[in-house]
Structures are given as C-alpha cells and as structure tokens.
Length: 214
Image (cartoon, rainbow, N blue to C red; front, side, top):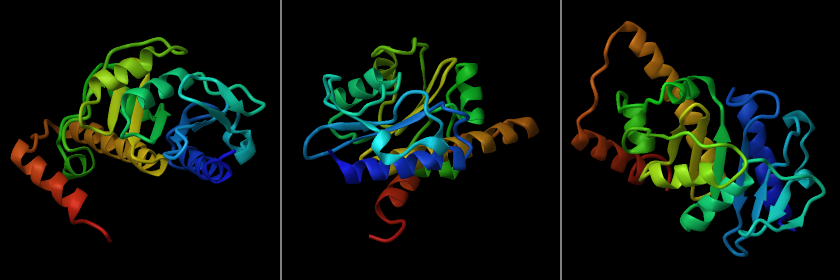
C-alpha cells in the first residue's frame, strides 16, 4: 500500500540525522495520503541507517494498522490527532533538535528576531505545555498552541512541525533548528530587537507568495 508515499517518507527520514535534528532512533516523520486519508509513519525504535521504505507502517485515522510488520512510532496517536483536527495538514515531523529543544526545556518561545523567522513561520515559534508520550496528549498540545505557525516547541520535550505535505514539514523542522541556533548565539552577545509585526507580515507574504519559482 502507498509504496510511493513510503519511499518519500523514507527519504525524508534520512534528512533528520543528516541535518542533526535527531540522534539514534529519536524523532519521526509521517505523511497523510490526500486521496485515501491513510497515514504512513516510521516504525518505533528503528535506526535510521537500518530503515527501509517497506518498514513504514500504514494506518487509518482511527489508529488501525492496515499494513506493516513493525510497531508504529510511540508518537502515532499524537500524529493522528493532529491529522484529525487539521485537515489542511498532510505532513507531521517530530524532532529533538538541540537548540530548539533548549528553548523548549526552559519553556520559552522563539521571538521574531530574524527575517528568516518571519519568512518561514510568520510570527514567533510558540511553546506548548508539557505532555506525556504515548497518547493523544502531545497532539492536543500541538493543535492548541501552534496557531498559524508551522512549528511548535513542547515544554521539556522537543519540536513538532506540520505542513501541507511531509517535505514541507521536514523543511520547517530544519528551519526551526537553524533559527534557534542563530537566536541562541545572538542572545550570548546581547538582547536582539524583535521585528515589528507589520514587517513580519510583509516578509512572510513575500516569502510565501513571491519568493522562489512558481
């Protein structure tokens, strides 16, 4: 089932360690097939360099495993909760990338100190509350606190990103860590100024609607 989507999600999983967003078996990517509504997600506890496309698990939004010999990610219930409550989302990523997770550890959002934050996120990267792993609780925190952003920090835990597809969600995860590192370095030198809201809106609109090839 969904062989092309499995291949895509497998390739995207390889981007997580490549961009230093995860260590060992931590983190996961999932994708929802827009036609069937089925979800492909990483199996639990499998090393990235031992992961294959066919190892991925296919589920419906109720959590029923339709294909796959391995147990799905421990974050599956939260991924599915996000998909059920955000019909615009077809990709979800979870990482423990170090600089972004450092902000999550101290329960602080990442303000718009950089044009790159305005571009990609359109505002501050919020920090949600703490929730235990294994149930829908993390997904509930994501949906409640992410707002119009594509990323949210989870107190004492890590990062969740979303997108219209899995590739966009992975890109958001890469960008969260990149801006978190730059902001952390800036804070060692002094107190940065936040960009005015009107400039943030203009930058985000330009990046969304003008930048790149259409």
